[in-house]
Each structure stands twice: as structure tokens, then as C-alpha cells.
Image 1 (tube, helix red, strand yellow):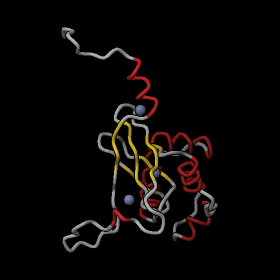
Image 2 (cartoon, protein in one colour):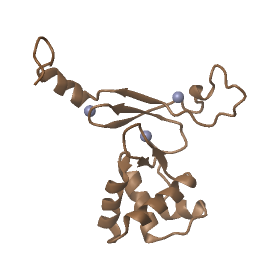
Image 3 (cartoon, protein in one colour):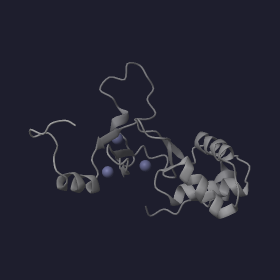
Amino acid sequence: MTTTPTPAADALRGAGLRVTAARVAILDTVRAGHHLDVETITGGVRDRVGHVSTQAVYEALHALTAAGLVRRIEPAGSPARFEGRVGDNHHHLVCRRCGAVEDVDCAVGHAPCLDPSDAAGFLVDEADVTYWGLCPACRADTAHSPSKGAGGTAP
Ligand SMILES: [Zn+2]
Ligand SMILES: [Zn+2]
Ligand SMILES: [Zn+2]
């Protein structure tokens, strides 16, 4: 990414949200992180501004998501995660084993997956694509561990 994001306080103001120390800390934490869950975000916010309740973090994340400043993703079977990369309809690779998440670019300037072969009259504004598989670390790990089956008897 070559663009410098708008400073958190300005971004909040621009979105019509009240600027509070906690909200600035939440947006900074989400932007600095990599698809963080609420627990991790809460920890990061406490490091920055001291005590803040988990409930307050939830409410602020909801407001930030509604304002389009953060994006919420929720891969099946995983808690919701938040990221500061918004507005580009990018997709995600998710590891089935450890839950690692990586970004995958959609086409810049045009998102081909937003044009389904048949939209059935819907006005499509988002394509939520998740690629499931094993991350490199888990692939290496499973390659080294003994494979089960192969004539063994279940305990
Ligand atoms: Zn993994
Ligand atoms: Zn992402
Ligand atoms: Zn796409």
C-alpha cells in the first residue's frame, strides 16, 4: 500500500463520528493489526489509552464498521475480525487449521466478481469471497507429522 491513510481523528471526524481517545485508539489498533479479533483489539486499546470495557470496544467497532472506516469479516467457525483495509472488495485466504488470514487482491478499479453471471435482478455491492485451505506453516507441519490411517487401529 503506497497511500497514507487519513489520521484516525480526521477519519472519524470525516465520517461524522465523535472523536474520542478510545475510538482513535481502536482505529489505530485495527489499522496496525492484521484481521484482529475483538479480544486482541481490546488489549491493544488498553495498551494505548488504559482501561476500556469490552462492551465499549464492541460498540465503537460497530460504529466504525457502519461508517466504513473498518471492515468486519467473519469466516465460518471463527470469531469476527476487523481490518482497516476498506473499500477495495479484497478477499481472504483462511487456513482451516490455525485460522490464519491473508488478503487477496480483487482487480483494482473493477471487481469482476461483482458481476455474477446472473444477478437475478439484484443490485450487487459486495462479493464476500473466502478461499479455504492450509497456510504455508500448517502445510509444512502436516507434511512432517505422521499421517494417520494406513492400517492403524483407532484407540
Ligand atoms: Zn495454518
Ligand atoms: Zn483483509
Ligand atoms: Zn474479486
